[in-house]
Length: 335
Image (tube, rainbow, N blue to C red; front, side, top):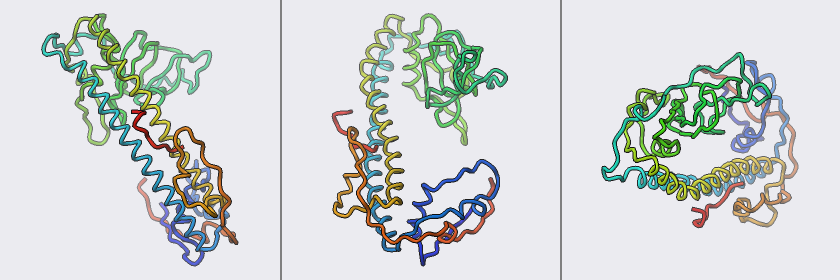
């Protein structure tokens, strides 16, 4: 780890901090990159007054961006609350009319995935390797790669059994190969697959592990719930999906907006250090934060003048320390 201090005669420490956020090098070996590469990178240093102005503009825009992101995060949480309310209403409000069963008594099989099939594996889908491999992840539904052998050939529900996505469920309809303790639940003929997923989603399972959250097969097997007749399960699934479709669309909208916000953050930094960020006339910071249907605004010619050339090392002094190892505004009508 490297601790850096600033050469205050030529550089503002916040200016250098933000500049270093977009100054990258390839670092795929164990050599000392600060000495050999990073410290020698040529950077443009405008007068200190201009650096201060750029930092102020960056932080003003970032504050507006953070506010928009916080609104999105709040709406995201509200949608989770709404989703749980819908599930609880339709699945946990039977007033004792349905039989209570344990999951192990209404499923064909419950098991956890194992190791990656190393000798027949591909990161991309090919003519030979067409069977998806799924792991404990939320992104891309946990897709890890492809193989030529399947371990599951029936419709089922999977539960992420380990890591930050523990408890996340997916419906699987096609053959696949589960790995890394991904829990697979194959329902019996009297249990609708979608009903199973929603029922699992409606409950809080006992997650163990203080450092790495995890679910175990024995815990899942003992999970109890009310099981209505199959026709009633199908009716309930239709009722739930009709109510959750808009929530799902809004969740997708929010997730895309959060990705756009991060892209805009990087755009702000790039424009700041290319001389495009400092506006000559307008002071309206909201112009830089578009709504969903707006494009990122065209850059305004900046006022950075008389920069000096220097290396990162000339602006920052380093000390080595040992180491152990488009933004959017959410609108009410979208909820």
